[in-house]
Amino acid sequence: MTQLNKRLHSLRMPDVGVYFLTALLAAAYVLLWNKYRPYNIDDSWFSSFSYNLCHKHSELDDAFGGRFPNGMGGTVVFGKLAAYPQCVLYDLFGWTLTSLQIFAKLTSLGGVILIALALLKAGFERSLVWLFVISFIAMEPFFNMANQGRYESVTFLFMGAALLLVSYGRITFAGFISAAAVEIQPIGIVVPLFAAIFLLTTRPGSRREMVRSCLRLAAGGLAFVPFYFLLHPNAMDAITHPDKGGTGNEIYLLGFLHNYFIDAKYYRHIPELALFTISIFLYIKNRNKIDNKFAIYSFISLTTLSLVTGWGNFNYTVFWYFPALLLVFQIAQSYRMAAWLCLVLLLYVVPQYAVAYMLNRHSGFTQADITKISEQIRKVAATDQRPLNIFGDYALWFADPTHYNVAGLGTVNRAGLATMAVCRDVTQKYLLSCDQIGQLVKLVPVSIVDLPSSKVKLFLTEATVSPQR
Image 1 (cartoon, rainbow, N blue to C red):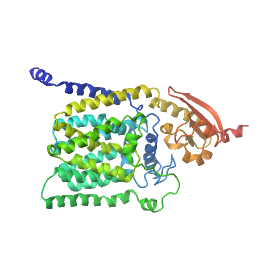
Image 2: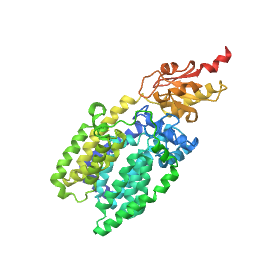
Image 3: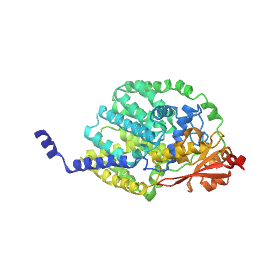
Image 4: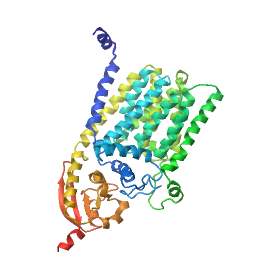
């Protein structure tokens, strides 16, 4: 009891604030379960890649109709090392929004734990790593990754594994894992980049030893190449004969940094941009006080990658944010202000999640909502003798992954094949409303599922009822 009292008395104000706000952060993760980005198209989109691969044995984007290189276009070139683990967990717990949230959080938190262990092994101060990890988990790039069904969380997990392997001297295996991360998605190229920088900055040695280590890392990467072609036997054909349709990925001058800092609603990330900008000047002033150069070299490399590629996908920002925030904490630690920095960041971001909850608490679909719609689909389908073919709202894909085709601008040619339409009277990007579907195929209303967030309408096509006339 005496030791506990001593520990309590030794706590400083920023420490108490950090503990309190970390508890609120945990509450935000719970309260925003399926509410952080309601109607997020990527949840069903990437889950459909996995479902098609494992259950339809198709590498294509069958549900949404996308084609490589106008997006990933399924798993024909990338993504199988994320799809297969996703299938394992989803098959175990069901193809549901709940499984999606569990998978995203397990892989995201697993990745940050591996990163923390790698930093500790590399000699970073324990208090610095602890405060950095809390802040990183709190910031929106990580929060976003841990709350959706995209493949970034698996890439992030591989990144943590590669860094940990480097820290323990398993260089060849680290190279293999790094190359495997590139298979998951193009942004996976950051993993071998991070692994190489981590190797050069945390494992000092003679020039000969460094060259030897880099060759081992490269050899491990090359060893993955045959496995890539085993996973993707059709990749070369997809690359040499790309789809000519579609608009392709939008290119931005600043890449994913533009998407995150400039395009965000209410310009809410500008304070973070100011923090990183100030930190660069402080680093230049105090660079001699910061021994480990991993964060600054990685920060420069990822910033350059964003500018050169122009990839306008804000989901990629989490990989840039890792070294950027670590650098900020190294600078704060040199001023003995790391705990205060963590407190300020939590005070800055946790209220934003409270606002997000207030705005979104009545939006989106819960798993209970999806179950109701699924049950209604089965009831309606039982009245129709044709094989079920759904044309519907992408947010409701989880209601029946087997028979679902998304009603979007790229799939209008599938409307005539539908036996059922599942839709809402809303206008959203990439989504056809009930009225718009009705312009493509004659619909007969059969049911309405009245949910707290919206009304979902079920229709049969005219062909279903015409024999009864």
